[in-house]
Amino acid sequence: MYCTKNITDDLYWIGGNDRRLALFENIFPVPNGVSYNSYVLLDEKTVLFDTVDKAVSEQFFENLVHALGERTLDYVIINHMEPDHCAMLKEVIMRYPDVQIVCNAKTADIIKQFFKIETDAVIVKENDTLCTGKHTFTFLMAPMVHWPEVMVTYDTTDKILFSADAFGTFGAINGNLFADEIEFEHKWLDDARRYYTNIVGKYGAQVQALLKKASNVEIGMICPLHGPVWRKDLEWFIEKYQKWSTYEPEDQGVMIAYASIYGNTENAANVLASRLADKGLKNIAMYDVSVTHPSVVVSEAFRASHLVFASPTYNGGIFPNMETVLLDLKAHNLQKRTIAFMQNGTWAATSGRQMNELVSGMKEMTVLEPTITIKSALNDSQSEEIDAMVDAILESMN
Image 1 (cartoon, rainbow, N blue to C red):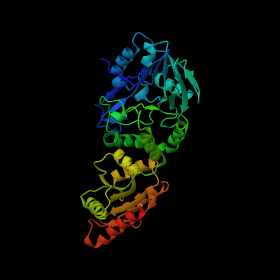
Image 2 (image 1 turned 120 degrees about the vertical axis):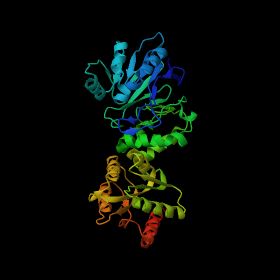
Image 3 (image 1 turned 90 degrees about the vertical axis):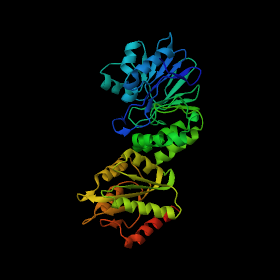
Image 4 (image 1 turned 60 degrees about the vertical axis):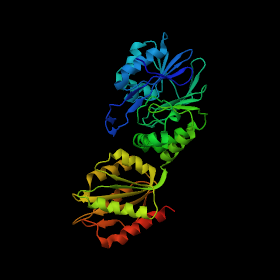
């Protein structure tokens, strides 16, 4: 049976939810599932905004048929060609052979790559418009947010921004489509941050360019391709994007990521966290990189102002899971953080130096000295070293 949601009098959500998917893009855990959003407008001309992943294709077509009723499909606007949004495009064309594809030139090329078909598309450029009757749409290019062909579509009539992957989030929609109907800050923000930082985080400059374009129009609603629709408190969520895309810390706090083989490096991390707490710091998060997916640590590193990395030396290098995290952070362009290191080595502690070398290739990083070196296990004589690191972290927060 169809499962659609009314957004306005003539705009409908016709997407689907996948709660069985284990790994989004075959890499990111999605324990809360994911939604694939698609929208249909019933104007003088009918318009489909993007399609869905093949996992929810049956539901999508039931929804599309129901929403259209006796009408045919006139346009399909493609904002993003990634297969979790474009997978059903070829079948849409087969079912509605007279439909006109509206896209930019880069998208048209990628359509050929995926589907090996020639399309007589309506090619749009920056600030081009399309009138469908009551509604007029303006197209804004958003390259590398997060593919080079991405664009967003702005409905000048109802002030709605169809934002592609921007303002999206992991998490299936559980009946309530609108962000103001759910406890977004408490139950969805972590998934939204993890989605942004891991999917789009590398492209802060490009997100900034899109935000500047969007600031020139009045936005009353945001319809992303993943997650809830925004119709209230848009400024709050846009401000999150402003911080994330400029790599400004979201919170003043400490994230401690550690690797530990026999528990001794973990103990040192716990001692540090405990003494930070004794000095009154409340915002402390700890993650064992061997049991926590790197995407979580990446997300938390974008959130927190101060990061501590504690790793044993392994085969003369950084413990592999810790190295993966640091390489991920570098790949996602993290910057503007204050960093401290703890290293462990029974006979040759070198992980601290090598972690520092990785971080030194990242922009505007402040490294606190000295690195704490543990020889097998932390001992009582190193208490002052721990206190000194605590003091350095707290002083750098002022």
